[in-house]
Amino acid sequence: MGEGMLAHIAKNLHMIGITQITQEVNKKGKINSEETTKKVIRAFLEIIQQKLSQGENINFKSYFTLKRGATKPKGSKHCGKHEKALADYKQANKGKGITAFAKSPKFKNLVNETRKCKDCQKHKQQLAKSVKLVNRISFKPSKQF
Ligand SMILES: [Zn+2]
Image (cartoon, rainbow, N blue to C red; front, side):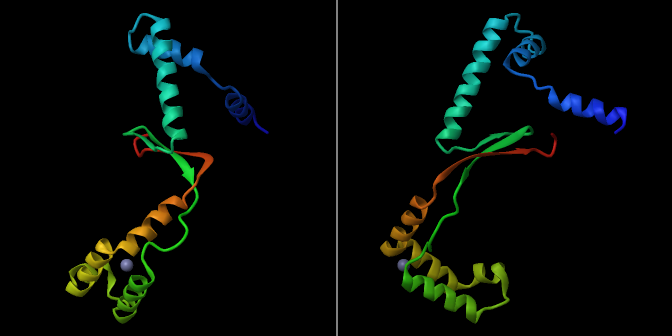
């Protein structure tokens, strides 16, 4: 193992925390009060924690996105009748692609019908209820990161 590699590992072992971030934010933001900066940072972290635990995702545009993990929805979002109608339509128009679907009056009618259908609405609600939050947060850096 080369020296560069060791330095790299040593660097990765080092982790900074609230104290160092507070000092740097205080300096960079020219706040002139570590106490005030710390209050703001603590409040900021508490809000983020609270939002994530409520299942909200957070997007800090041009920085990063934090997403609360959730299970995949289970079941269909349509009632049996409309599930079949949509499947039949798709089977009959195989290979035409989504743009052809969007232009088709028949398909549009079908979609409108499902929106008004009470059974479809029930299925959608059940689908939403089947999603459970899991104890995992994903971090996605933005392109400018
Ligand atoms: Zn329906």
